Amino acid sequence: MNKFDTNKLKKIAVFTSGGDAPGMNAAIRATVRMAIYKNLEVFGIYQGYQGMLDNQIEPLNLGSMANVIQRGGTVLKAGRCQNFLKPEFRKIAAQNLKVQGIDGLICIGGDGSFRGAKALWDEHQIPIVGVPGTIDNDINGSEYTIGFDTAVNTAMEAIDKIRDTAASHDRLFIVEVMGRNTGYIAIEVGLAGGAEEVIFPENPFNLEKVINKIQHGIDRGKKSSILVTAEGDKPGYAYDLAEQLKQKANFDAKVCILGHVQRGGSPTALDRMIASRLAAQAVLSLLDGNCNHMIALQGTSYVNVSFDEAIQKKPFTYKGLLDLVDILSQ
Ligand code: F6P
Image (cartoon, rainbow, N blue to C red; front, side, top):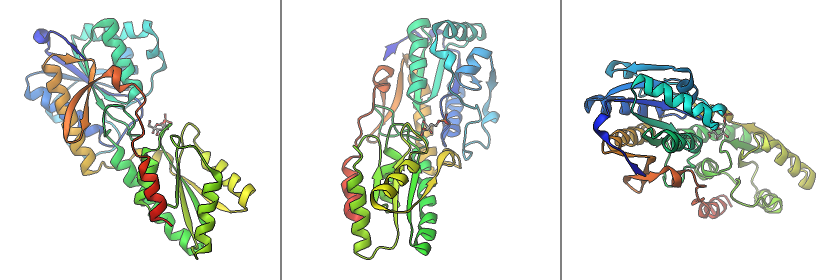
């Protein structure tokens, strides 16, 4: 975390970056309205870092944020900008911000977005505070990221529906959920959805164990089972798994890939509430002269965590839940 001189902090801008997440609109709204309450001018940058390069920067006011808190997606749009990985493009972005007179930023996004934010501070001393927003819940230093609860609930509702048809046909289903290189969504959905097994990148895959678990269920009279797998770095991995189960144990599994449906929808109350608190705190922290950090949720506190720490790999703290999934689905 760094300090900067807040004397000339008059205009700030907010943007959403990376994959969208339900609750981002609540975070934008809280940023805009807290900033105006504190007598700042606020701008919105559209399309994330790409919009910074293309000057897609518009003033926002209290009315711009009417009726957005309940909407999924992000009204500022989002994206992953490959050019921003290059210093020459970051220089253009910094120049555009200076021309507009913008002297502080609120970045709502994930670890890739925070890498860009850190580079903007390191190279051009543009003060930025981050707000962790991604359905994956994989930002180091924060126990929660905006969108996670909505995504988990969407996937769990899908599993409840799959359970109906699985039970009607006595079938084995593999449900693939999102989570790039992480199993936070998978394990919560597996536990809440009563799955027999959860497969995710942080845990070594053991085909024998999965087969034994399914067979144990069949032996005790179970007619249908549900496996949840994270997509990891290979969306569609569930099909490989189905093939392995067929080859090794002659199990016929149906596959359901939930995909981007998990990124949409109206945010849950939890997502709206945490998004509002994180973003309001981000504006206050910027006004206190803090930058190069994100606001993180730790326990019940909203604390500052440096971008340096936030971009490290988050340790997987849910591993113990796998035992519970096993016990509760015997
Ligand atoms: O990071 C959020 C996430 O939804 C991951 O769970 C998923 O692997 C990835 O984004 C998909 O990205 P895209 O929308 O660019 O295909």
